[in-house]
Image (cartoon, rainbow over all chains, first blue to last red; front, side):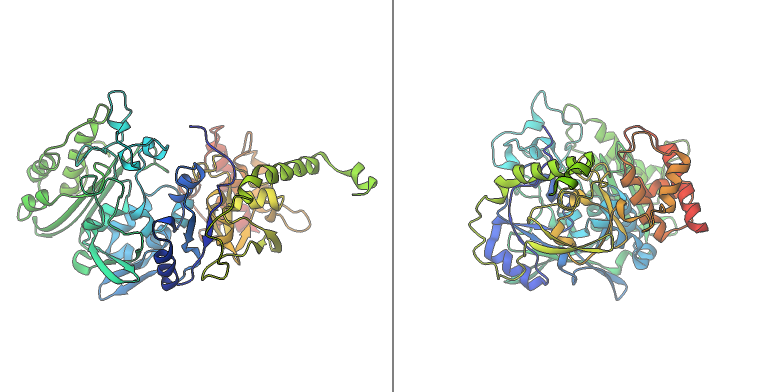
Length: 338
Length: 204
């Protein structure tokens, strides 16, 4: 598709200064309102004229959802905290290095200076058929262009596909799931808190949404409990280029050890399904086991159980298997590529 | 415009004039597209089009469409064409400017979102007497670029980074400018020039 270099089509712009003002706007305009945080996901949609919202609610002037607070050993992260601020925050670096690692690997420096944690977890999928404006299932049509005989689907799903085969592009989402984070959603009607893994939704439940956020809700805060503070972390992101690119597969794990025995572990994988997947079966299987090559191999095999490749993405199965192995083992084997 | 000034008008100014006129014509469809929801200008968080931007130390009054990006405003409203638009999609870095000393892609910033913030473009680096900024001087000394379309972006990304780390290693600096692409693939010489810029800044 030709890239349009022009001003975007007009929209009404609101720049609320407080959460209450924002919630009022969301209540008034509902699904007509487009929430813009850092804007890195939004601008593609708007510039390409694929989405034409009448109202944009730009959160750039809202200062009260920025920054990280240390709360009893855990963290309260304002949803508008930039990825750079997250990476540089001492508490994030020292106790929740998993999140710092994940955020540091997002896109490019300029994007991290602007992109927010709330936006990173709430962003839409990058399936190019969908993003190019094809009227696929996700866009309200009745076909998946990425799962047709001639489709180019190297980056698409191997798990959890249901008509749509798009994947979750977020790097911070698996890290937050592994840390057991909670997301706070506010609306005029009140507040609800959802576990990180329950914030995301697959096409079997809702094919047009990536998250459970309702149009009248705003993701305000991400709470990271102290449960895995200072635990053993592993994060790895595989992508084609070392800058800008979204993950082909990423993995995040947090575990506590007693000697060499795995006590407690949480493990999540991104970019293999429409939602970042918490691998509960693997967690249960490795808990109480000795952390060694055998356990890691078993975890890798179990992780990809039931994976179904598309025409061009069977490599993702082996990639995911190996990344889960590394996440359990804590890194590549001697002589294995880094 | 008097006849005298017409004679002296440079080619560059003429081109800028044509660009500005073209921008107005091509955007008029958007300007006049009616929006049914704009009936309540006093609603909380609503936006006035006329605004003041702090660009390169000057307060510039400018009429900005709500959907306008900072790159568009800088180039086509304020005539600061040193900021380049390459991809217009946050994927190349040519439009990098400093906003409160932080390098950002101006193609992906709504102008209305940086009201009251300090914006510095490549035009704002040199001193009033024309003395180049050390990083610019280093580009001249090292002949760091080939076509140089990406240069303003690289220079702004470097200047921004050096504010937080004045003595980077070559690897650190490479990471700092990793959000900028050079289609001439001249990265090695660019890095040499940027490293030299850092050195000149430390000496200054």
